[in-house]
Length: 255
Image (tube, rainbow, N blue to C red; front, side, top):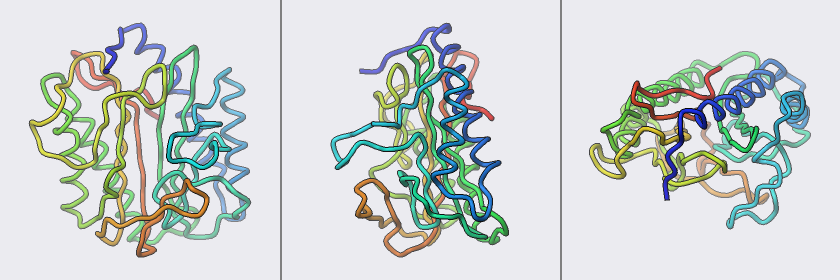
């Protein structure tokens, strides 16, 4: 069931979204060669604490997970697509890092992600990230009253496929509200004009995930959480929480 949010509720979700945005900004600023993923997680925890917010990630355990998630960020390096668990891994020059973070504030949730290169970037990685961001921008532009979920999905898929990148099937965006994951599902590939009609008051997490090789294969790592590309190629993941309003899409996690 899809819950339509009031203007007041969307304002409250914007406040939660800004906490997540600040946590991601702080993590990115702290991500230097030699810094551990656990240290980045602590940076994000401090931002949440200072805001009086909590993490929807910490302790989260969906049906597929063998254990509750132990951190407030997902930190996915190089061939990790999403759901990477922060460890004592020390960042290296040229690592492609995707950081996903959410915040819960006054009973409302938000969810957002960024991808960037630590240190000296490879041109191929920059192109991958730029395409992911372009796919996100195109899909947000499609998140308007009168369109359908398929229009958002098609915008993501077209940007990714046209550039020659793969898309991990079965993973995509979702509704957001009182909980981090709500209805509806928002696929990263689909047919325009199909699916659930978009209405004012819907709030969606839209999150393109791209695989550099152009292949779609991925597998679950032994930790039961991290998804990695089958061929070892690099991946990028970006995400915003977006409210659909009568005046157009409103990005609640804008940085």
